[in-house]
Length: 634
Image 1: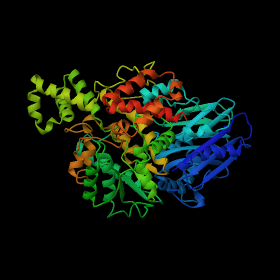
Image 2 (image 1 turned 90 degrees about the vertical axis):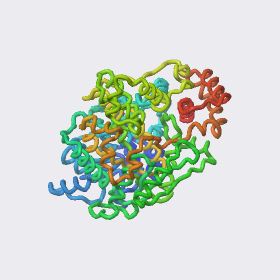
Image 3 (image 1 turned 120 degrees about the vertical axis):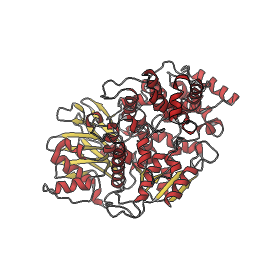
Image 4 (image 1 turned 45 degrees about the vertical axis):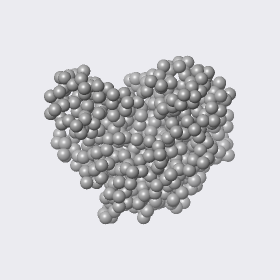
């Protein structure tokens, strides 16, 4: 929706208004439709806001926004159920002057205090200044869909912003790499995200489901307001009833996220998640009267194509469009200025990613060029519905360890696709003597799921002077065991936060907001309350989603097991159009400044890869991560 920024001079000196504007406007790409800047607390506190207009396009929706001459807010995100909350507050005597969710947030905060967060269904990062209490309150949504970064120097400065790049523009703030964190991020970026840190000195993240308070004593107080483990629910033991409940929540989640005063669309890959979102939206074509604030333009899908590469999913997307009789815009990116565009998008990302973000940014750039401001996408399901085959692999080994033959056979079916050649009874009969199946499974794991060829140049970490591994975040509550524990961790702390970060940056670089029906907190509660076999079984990952989408998705898509995902064809690019660019970066002075890297070893290995033409996804991604870091360090 927007970008937010704030500077609080804890030494009580006056805010430099021009610096506040510069700080805020560095994120203009997130909010091209307007800007606002306000000073409070004897001018030692300043809020900034860049607006992406989505609800109530009038000047009444401008921020920073004030309420009751007491509360002031700068806010990024959407509270999708704001209409229902507003109606509830009206019964308590509240009245409203705008059609925004912003005003509803402040009224709810006045009525319920910090517990208002539990009523919100949406994504948000906001800061509220309470003039009466002289208290600054920041909050981030349950799962961290919207970003919020801050820096705190006791008795001196507190500053916050939607993106780390903004901190380059604060007077007296020297934004520089935290070399330790950067080294970790290049090997395992999820550790940094999970701990609320960044790759920069003195810039942190407010973790998902947390609040931050600064009161009169100027001491920072951070509290956790949401933990999914504390909000699990009772679900029916009947699988068919579970399927119907999932479908009901998912349909309502899609409807809530269609509330908009501007055009919306969907990013479609042809995979089961994005196809489920798009096909569900198309179900509403004949009955959309119960969707409040539905715009006229909401039926298009945008599909990124990469002809001649392994990343191209056009055929699958076309099946979905044909099945729904929908409308599609097929994007074939023009990379005639690849180096220039890849540099620009990487610098704006301001984080580490193993695949150039430009493949994602191009989708939302095409949307924006056609007047689309909101995209309903399919993120989130993989990490709570066992969407990655590595989960089935882990389950297989646990089944063997526990001598659970039925479960081991089920995982074999999922991993190797043996269900096409064997029925379950035959597999179970062969369980005690299945050397041939073991061999096939091992080949499948090695060649497909682990994808770790012997030419993986970082396999012994020769590129790094110190090795970092995935840390055990023991300070988080995880009520599960085995693969379900891995799933819970990946959703909340590891893989999903990275994906959310990357897609937020990619979309907001082009002033497009992503809404994610699979991230509705009611669905998250429901999915983590289900037994494992409801999500991983019947020969498939994402079992309940596939069954809920019967007669909604085309069957070939609904039962599809090949997972590609949106990404750049990094192997093809690094071998040819980026060859000179990559070599220039790896031989630059900036490379020598990253002292934790073994630069000579890296340069020699890259030369061998080019000479022997032995590039693969792993070594290309590892190489790109380092180039990514060098570009940020401009």
